[in-house]
Length: 216
Length: 216
Image: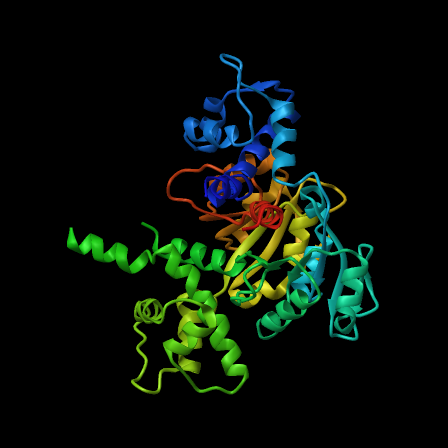
């Protein structure tokens, strides 16, 4: 039982920690650009607005410890964070839905630098199928399984209209896709071992509008 | 004191509620497309995987009540949700940084349907300044205050490199912008009355990669 627990503790980093680590990464990348060599958790804390003790705790999960009075080595911290977060490895992904949002995400090559390699797109629209967007070819969705397997895709990005979200997810899972990155506001459901990551742009908008209007 | 509390309760909808409402909206939009006229909270619950009692509670915040044995009117529910979430009103926004991500977001006209009206872009790159992207003109960032005021922008979308995130935020706030939609992984800080909404695409990627690798 202890072994199982330890296994989970290792592989399954708590989501709040995972969400703080990219903040630290962004800040140490900035420091490296500025030529800074060492940074203390107190200095990160001041900049990021997270308790220094929380930062030290988060970073110790990466086996990183700062030196007394010197702090963390900026270069080492940056590369450890990038590696821990998986940003330094290529994850092959396919795009389902090459409409407005899907093509925008393909065009945003910034995702490359965070380890996301979009290898192919799929659509039903004959005007889009057969085209190429920033070197990413768009295929008929009928060829999903063949093409996504040929490219070794493990992630499917879902950027279809809401009424096709669940069917797209089902198709992707049936074709062996391991993780779904869902940009639709639809709540996709799958078997338990599929990873579902929702990026809720519209919910973010809703929260922002409400705060703008209401304020406290 | 009670009055103040009530005021806050009305204007400041809890974030978890605000984040569930777009799911209901997506589902009832789907139902309308399918010609469905009434839906019960139990049916929404089955589809969305949220407790029916929670759904009824969330919807009662919108003064919406289902009819016994019939449920909610799909059309009325959809338009109430769109209105409550602010998706049926235009919110003028400017884009700071028309690089890869910024231009992708301008190109994604899907945001229009959620009430976001991007009226202008700003950049420092002479190759981008003076161009037009889907009818959105890109200006030199020097002209930020003049142009954003002329357009009546209330929201600034921040899509600049990490090392310019804070300076962009400061500039926007000084020019009278009320809300910042931050797509960078940098933790922006401002005076208390500015709304900051972070959309943490990279944190979402980090969580997804970790779940893919570790999995439970």
